[in-house]
Structures are given as C-alpha cells and as structure tokens.
Length: 195
Image (cartoon, rainbow, N blue to C red; front, side):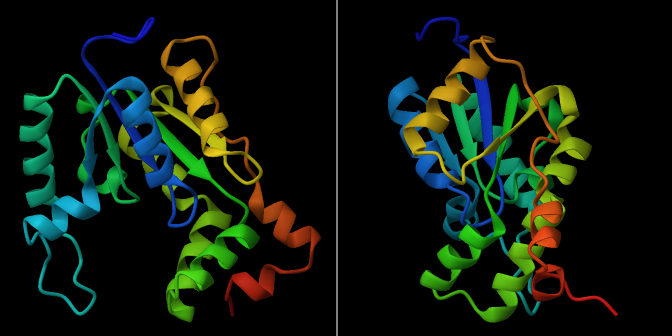
C-alpha cells in the first residue's frame, strides 16, 4: 500500500480527447499498483454499442461490466471521456477531470487525423467545460478535482493527483476558463458555431 491511500480506492480520470487521460492513467497504474479499467476498451471487447449511425456506447451494458470489475479489484483507476455517462457516484472515491488548452487539443486531434466535425465537437466541449459539468452532475463536486494539463508533464500531473488522493492538496473545480482565453484571442467564432 502507498502512504495514505486506502486498500480500497476507485479513481476516475476523465476529460475530452487529447487532454492526456490515458497517459496519466497508465502512469498512475504503475506508480500506485492500480487495476486499470479503460471504458473504451471495454466497449470494444464486449461489443457494447447501440445500433445508431454513430455507434453510441451502450452505457447500461458498460456500467454492469464495470460494476462487476470493481467487485473484483480493490484499487482501481477508470479512464475514459464517457465516465460521467456510465459510472455511478457511489462507486467512485475521486474523479480527476483533465483540462487542456483548446489550441493544444486542436493540434493533437489534427495529428490523430480526427475529422473536422469531431475536432470541432471536442474543442467546443473543452471550451465550454462539458465533461466537467457532467462530472459534477454525476459525481458531485466534493468528489472532483480539475487539473490543467496544458503546460504540465504527465509525471507532474500524477504527482498532483497522488497529492489529492493523500489529502495533501485540496480539490478544486472551476479553475480553468477557456472561453475567456478564446474570447481574448478573438477566436470564439472559429471554435463555436452560433447563429
């Protein structure tokens, strides 16, 4: 066991694509000897998709699978942008919502060859803080910490998360305001479509 970390602990790492969720989760898995549950991988392994044009995830099926996996493991990190849509508050001890500059996300998603539509959706979601909002609605603000990964290494992010887990650092939300940044740069119309 590590320091003040309980023998039974469930951590969630969520955020938009391109913020560093998987890198952070894999590093924490090694450092803290956690069982890793990747929501996207589970959906693929268990064919948990609804027959819709966009192959939406079957959130009920995934929730059932995750609940059974949590019963098997004592110390777990769950990773995925869909966390607030498939997990239950009572399963979770701490949710980390990773945030990143929309300009950095744009560059990352372009390098990953995302479609222009998916890039727009994800950048707009980051600017508006959709996953943070949905996480607060699902888990409650007392179980959430928001971290900006823009100019931070994954090791530094992991150190901050470990400090949060051990209670050495207070949990904060509302620390990121990408809308003001985008507005200051005159890029609201570039990233957010409105009529």
